[in-house]
Image (cartoon, rainbow over all chains, first blue to last red; front, side):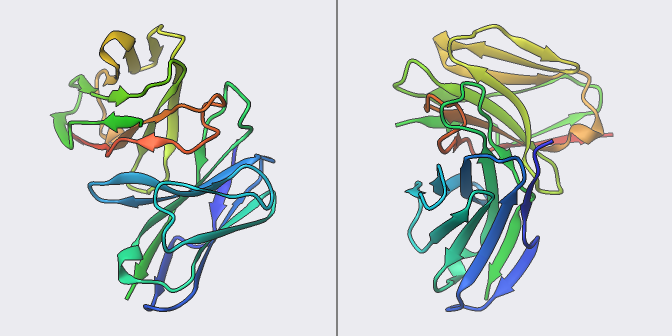
Length: 115
Length: 117
């Protein structure tokens, strides 16, 4: 079974703090993704990565950065957290971009509140 | 640009009723991939099905079935004899990438399904 884990289920931070959200997958997947989920908006892609040290912007990258130093770990960074970044953050991974049977598998999510 | 529309924001039915969740998509690519995910109250998205654009066969898995119709750009999901455990938010998603889920998915806004006992 694919296992995607996220470092925290719930997180409360203050405006202006630097926030790290960590995601780890244990299936040697090449691709990893960060989404945020907001009521009425569904899931929106923030960043994704095809390989170590590679990153691509998604639909809403503003205010975020990412880091992928190791294949199994993909970090989402909020350089200076703001209240409009209060959201549910979901990490996902998938095997290989060239695979026709590829599917994204999701972690349990981190509910971030910025006060 | 790709787009997924789930027009039903919330559906409430009584247990054992059949229920269909609608999904309409837009894409300019001739090859694309459609997905359904379930998000129970615990929050984790659970993968249900993946369908490739070149395979229009309908799929049945137990009480779940999916109807893919390219002519109407729809990929609807039916639960037969619904159960309380089916209560969740269901998301339809689309990818245009050759690798299927290898690029970011475009999600619909989800349908909140409530099964009443």
